[in-house]
Amino acid sequence: MTMRTNWGLVALTALFTGAGAVQAQTASPTSDEAQRTAQAERLQRQAQEASQHVSSFKEASSLYREAAETLGDHPEAATQLMQAARLAYYTGDEDAAIRDFTAAGERALAWGDVLAAAQSFLDAAWVAAEAQRGEAAELAHRAEKLSSSPLIQRQERLALLNRIAEMQE
Image (cartoon, rainbow, N blue to C red; front, side, top):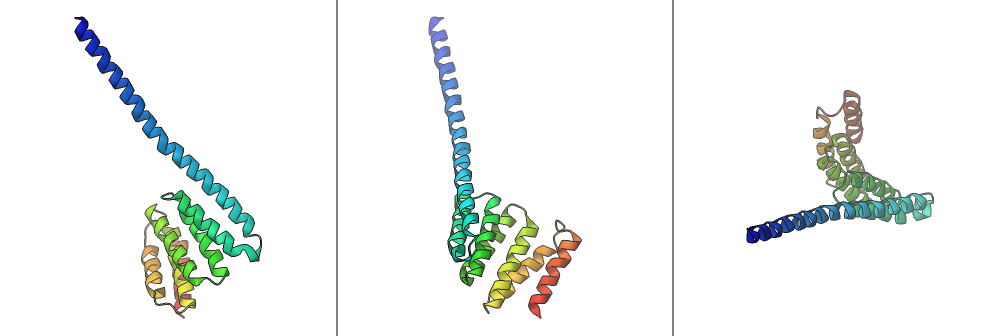
């Protein structure tokens, strides 16, 4: 009988120890996510400060991009990339603007924000068209396809389609 009780205690101890290890493992990603979010917020604040001065737009763009990378697979990363793209465009770095707008569109789409994705692809298309780059038509087409989504309201759809039409004039 004592042998059964001892084995029972060993089994219970293993069960509770295992449960504690599982809890520790699941707590760790949450802790890592909180640290990444806090770091991204610090980078965003630095980027906002830098973006107050035209001479610091390039630095601000890099900081927003770094904030997006720090966030990883997080819906806010798309917003950070859009900011990076705008500032890259203002500094004349069309390649970075197109790349960041496109990446923002991909991130927004992955999180189901169809409107933000369409707007980002359209912004990328606009910069590409202005720079006479070949990918402008493909990016505009992606935005146009997304504009037909039932998740986009009529007014927003019309605004997207008007922007596309203006690009083609």
